[in-house]
Image (cartoon, rainbow, N blue to C red; front, side):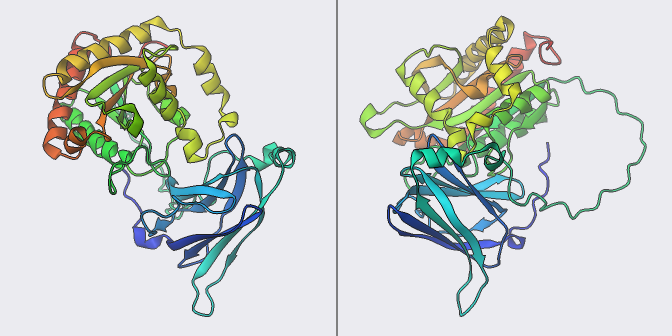
Amino acid sequence: MVAPTPVAASSFPIASDARLAGDAKQTRFVLDLDKPVQFRAFALADPYRVILDLPQVSFRLAADIGSAGRGLVKSFRYGLVMPGGSRIVFDLTGPAKVAKSYVLEAANGQPARLVLELEEVDRTSFVQSLAPANRPELRPAIADANANAAAAPATVRPAPPPDTRPVIVIDPGHGGVDNGTQAAGEIMEKNLVLGFGLALRDRIEKSGRYRVVMTRTDDTFIPLGERVRIARSHSAALFVSIHADALPSNEGNARGATIYTLSEKASDAEAERLADAENKSDAIGGVSLADEPTEVADILIDLAQRETRTFSNRFARVLMGEMKNTVRMHKHPLKSARFRVLKAPDVPSVLVELGYVSNKGDLEHLVSENWRNRTVGSMALAIDAFFAKRPATTAPTK
């Protein structure tokens, strides 16, 4: 699948600096820009956050900016949240409201500035401010970055024959405002797994036997529910989510690849910890989980389709059998836990942790193109073996 041609980065507003000022009663955030932008800000609870949605911005900020907070802000993070839209997420120390928000034009040698003023409030006042009208669904302030292209008149053509090849959805974890785990320096999980996912796509497509759909092809945040919907909407025959874990420094030095399937009860404490961490991705990206569409709620209720579970577990075993020939595996390579991204009831799904960025040896492999090529090759062989034993051209009947 060819990714759409992105708009040149130079056409986007540029954010050159950001800073916090104030105290635990009132805190101000200032973002320096090369041109004024439209925006909107709103708050979310549990955990307390303020979300700032912008048109797509080129962030040229210091690498560690946002990691240290001040006043009402514990920290903040930023990134692309969808094509045409960027987002800044502020983690708060407690309930706060957006007292003022405005943009200043460039003047007196100062760049254009976006200013957000936060003010401490009590829990009751905060909750009362979260009326449905003040909890918008995830979408950027300006989603028309590519709307200037005029739609060409439709040309009547004969319908192509249906493509009956199995659809494989590859899901690079995290993205955009959600960096995932981070190793020493600038190595981020979201970038490692995107590079791996694109390489896996290219290898699979070469055979011509499958159609491949990516949940993301660039540094964009995709909510967990949307990743599930992408798989279901394409009647996927297989869903493979790609990640790279890290252990806290006080929890040892695990290493090796691990393959996870869905279960309501985690296979061990480490699997449960990882599922809890991955399931927080929406909160990291600023999605209000209370606003999940009914479709996702229906999926959570309809988990007991045994055929899908059986196929998921079968692929996990086939994948382990191929990967162990070329990749160092975890001492317990097959695990299960309640991962939200694996909950499509009609799509066999696995989550592959390629290794631990917290382990020096694993990290050396994860950044190695040679290791990536070998691992991609073993996963492609596993996919071939899985479909050779399962002559299906589409997903199980819904």
